Length: 275
Image 1 (spheres, rainbow, N blue to C red):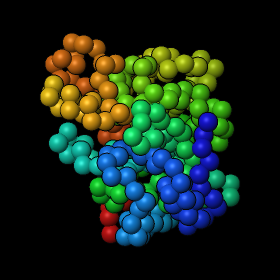
Image 2: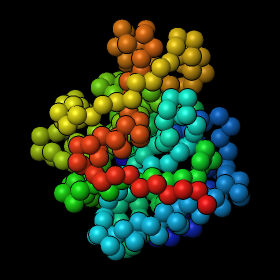
Image 3: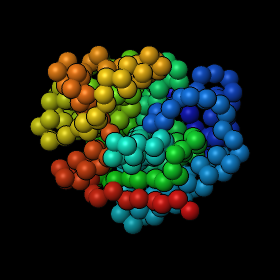
Image 4: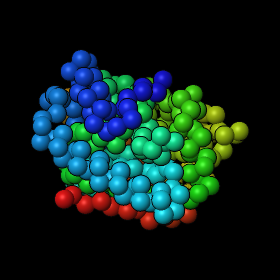
């Protein structure tokens, strides 16, 4: 199910999230779960500032061009060693009430399970981010129209949701599903609602549209250490020949931003730098 987090104001959404963090298992995506704890006041302040500036920029985009849906991403951890800038993305949409909401998949910290969440911008950026920077891409009007119908409907949004989670799940595999993978598979299902009802069908559409995953270079010792120390990392879904060669093909924000612009599904990315 899509967990309904968030209220009509960003600040109220923060209060709800703080309650959830104190009461149960935190959910994360795009950053390490090590030392998960309720956010510090400085973290809240920085996250809220980024959320408010993002909201203002998206509202301006909405007023200027009628934008209703964007691909929104954050930098939750340092992926510079892999040549990547962003770690996690979701689909943000403008609600009839006014605020923007983000539908995205998060990993239950310390587990191998992922769930869908509907959150406000404050919650989306309320994390111990590596860099307080936002990036978004505005899909074409036709793509926005298809996505909006899916994002507003819980049943449609969770059609391709797959609970078993690995942070580095194989792009064309079905054993696990990471957050960014859910996002583009859901895009495929939104674009072809009558013909795409399964993950393998979404993969065929993505391949037809020319999506190219990121190939991470991860050696055997690094793979072994990551697998032993983290429940949310697994490599056994990758083809053996590629895995043994240290070539891990997975879905990343950076690759999706490049692909959506190249395939004319979205405009060039817009970056909101830290203050």
